[in-house]
Length: 381
Ligand code: SF4
Image (tube, rainbow, N blue to C red; front, side, top):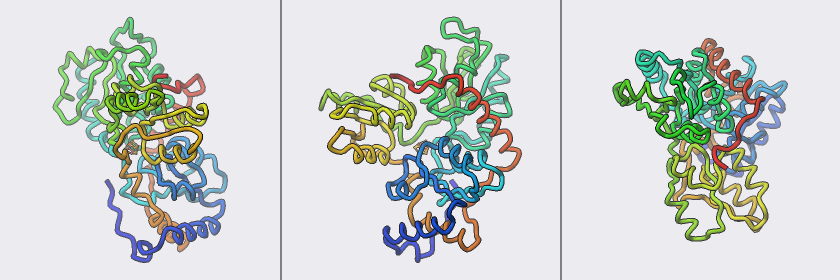
């Protein structure tokens, strides 16, 4: 996690309304030169001030599509700001309002560990290994995949990317000549591969904390899908028992979860899919329907508010499943970086070095070239 110095007291003492008023002033001062992006998991007060809201990749694409933009302020986490920097023109400056807004999942795949794992895996097997990384990863890991004929994926298109990576390999007649190393989220990898028909026995978890990934050479040679032992600290809080409990409470509830949840949760849920899929499903649902949602609490509460009195939307868990790093982005930090910008100082600039940028872009472009051919929208529906 990067260090964020404390803010001057003039920001910490301001009331939320005043902070919001000053941010609006700054926005009109910069006009089209500035775009503020708000990830779905941000607090409501940030979402209200964002020019665009969405998931991380959609936001980066939107930023790249803007004409005349000089500054992108990404209200999200570090890897998202890196993706925006990779996808936007080099003249665009991408700012993260709080440098300590990282992602525990992305941090679980440090490039040094990934390189060590690759060296070990390629020394154990002659099979072709295609590295696939979820977009929730550092630019260095995306570049690693781009430089080794791999690709990036999102939770919306993970299936399509896995199908491409495994080429002619099929669950019913796997030759073992092609494998995937799926980074950094074991759950998205497992849920997606299982949905494609790959049995759990065809997968092995590579634990980067253990020698040899905690696997025997034979286990590595036998596996088709090698899952990096990473997870989202928010989505792992949802459990199959919570689904049982909610159904016992009211059988009318439908359960919809994100595929970063554990496999047992995804199997038990009625529906599973990306954040955009969750939003679209609930938007399109019948009035009177009831939804228990397994994803970050801010998004769920916003949905509950939007449909109050029309549809019932609640968090699947009884405890607050909060992304604490996303939560670090607040009005104070947003105003601070805009004030600094107005004074001609760029703070918290996120800049990916040129070599990493080129290779990371390759992994994103490979993914984009695949999407047009039919991305899967649900892990289980
Ligand atoms: Fe990372 Fe999970 Fe937070 Fe998303 S919700 S930023 S994957 S820790």
